[in-house]
Length: 310
Ligand SMILES: C[S@@+](CC[C@H](N)C(=O)[O-])C[C@H]1O[C@@H](n2cnc3c(N)ncnc32)[C@H](O)[C@@H]1O
Picture 1 (cartoon, rainbow, N blue to C red):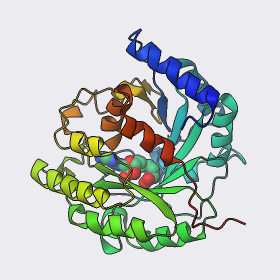
Picture 2: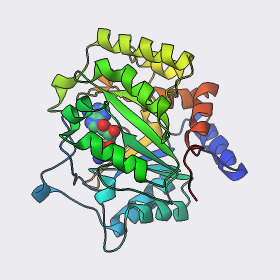
Picture 3: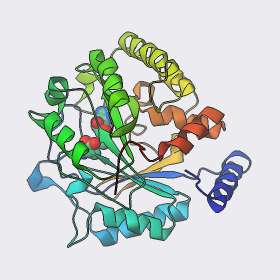
Picture 4: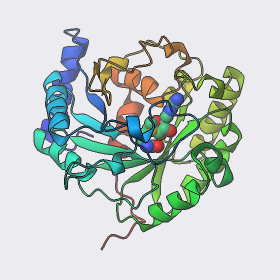
C-alpha cells in the first residue's frame, strides 16, 4: 500500500478530494472474474451451477479495470467464483494481475479457496479463505477441502499469503483455533476476520449479536497478546454494532454480470446494519485518517520471511 512517493502523493490528492471537495471516489475495486467455482460453500450466494456460469473475457476485464482506474481506484482484488479457474485462451489470473499493474493499479490481490495448486507472481497478496480447521472447514466447504487447502498452501512458492475467515453459526466456536493455526503457520502472515453477511438464501448462517460480540472480545484479547490479526482494534470494535458512519463507497464492485456498484451490493439489499465485512469498518478508518488503519494497510503486503523462495 502506497509503496513509493508518487503513490503517497496520489493518496494525499485522493484524500483531499474526498474530504475537502466532498468527492465520492473509490480507492479500491472488488472485481468478479467469473462465477464458476470448484466448491459449493454453505455460506456463499455468488456461485452458479456450472451450466449457468459466466466467465468474463480478458478484453472485458481490461475495459472494467480501465473504467475503475479512471474513477480513481488504485487497488484491485480479483474475486469469483474461484479466480484460479479463470482462463481466457492461455491467459490466467496472474496475467490479470500483471495487466492491472500495467494500467497503473498500485496493487492487485486475489481471493482463493486454495483447492488447486496456485501461484501468481504478479499478485501483491493472495487471500486464502480459511473458515475453520479440519472437519469444521469441510463442513462449510465440502469433504476433503481442508486437506487440499493445506497441500496447496504448503506447495505454493508465493510468499505473501494471508488468511481470511468468515465467522458464521457453524464455525464461531472455532475462531480461537483458526487464530492459533495462522499464528503458528509458516505460510500465512496474518488473519483477517469477517462475519457472515446475510445475502439472500444464506440468512440462517448469520451469527446473533451476542455471540458476535463475544468473538470480537476474544479477537481483541488475542490481538493484544500479539496474534497476527489484520483487523484493527477500532475496526473490531466497530463490528460490534455497525453503528459507525459507513464510507463503503471507498470500494466499488464490478459483478460477474458486468454491472458496476458504487459500493458493496449489500447496500442495495438493505443489509448494511447486519454487515460483517471487516473492510466496512476499515474504510471508515481510512476516511478518518486513522493511524492504526493506515499502518495495517501498509503492513498488509509484506513478504513472509518464513517462506524460502529460491
Ligand atoms: C465469494 S468468495 C470467492 C473467492 C474464492 N472462491 C474463495 O472461496 O475464497 C470470496 C470471499 O467471500 C466470502 N464470503 C462468501 N459469502 C459470504 C457472506 N455471506 N458473508 C461474508 N463473506 C462471504 C468467502 O468466504 C470468501 O472469503
